[in-house]
Length: 306
Ligand code: ATP
Image (tube, rainbow, N blue to C red):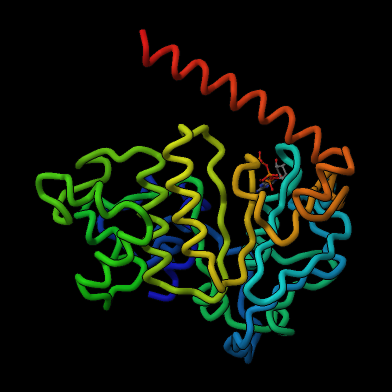
């Protein structure tokens, strides 16, 4: 069950091939004969998370040796703090989260958690320590309760309800005729992107990992949904070391540090306020995004009043 930490969006592309009911991700790799990129070192130890400090030190990485993606990235996420990674599409933001999970090994530099190199610990213990709220959550063809319980299978019904409440999806579930027994997934009730994301947040609240990766949705959500999701995300990241992969900029405002990635390097870093004041790349991205969001909102209102 520790394999559950593998982010479901990462394997989303093969999801449709997967037999229903399969919950063990290692089996899933075997079943599909997908080669795992990395293996545990002989004698690899379990990761011991004490405070949950993440450190990237001069990380160089390429999927393909011909094309460097990260060219010497160094940053830290101190215990319990939130660091957001922003930057143009294709800059390598999601790559950073994959490297923390050690889906790939880096070419040089190091990635450590509380001083332990991710290459020296078992993948199982590494993935158990990290919770992921992905952009696109895969729901199983089962009840909504099962889909929340997936975060921790021994959770009681009470704990499931509590997690759903904290994730701001409780009232929605209660409003369904079958409540927590409502069937969801491809063959059941289709949930919206925002609802699915809140199910993922509820799962993560149940799992209660010391380290969290939030992969913010690329798609536009309406302002109200976005606020609800933001509240749920704040809830789940409180007191946890959190890395936010921000494809939009809405979740980064309160981050302790924002790292702006461009062409494989860190172009700027600082708080939201400091980066806006310095008028660089981040400030430009922010302006552009605000204009786009305002345009989307106007369109939506126009559609609704039609
Ligand atoms: P976006 O905001 O658009 O999601 P991103 O900053 O998260 O972008 P990444 O997904 O990290 O970008 O991708 C960085 C670069 O690495 C891209 O140019 C992408 O094409 C390439 N890339 C990503 N995954 C792979 C892969 N499995 N094999 C080869 N190249 C890849």
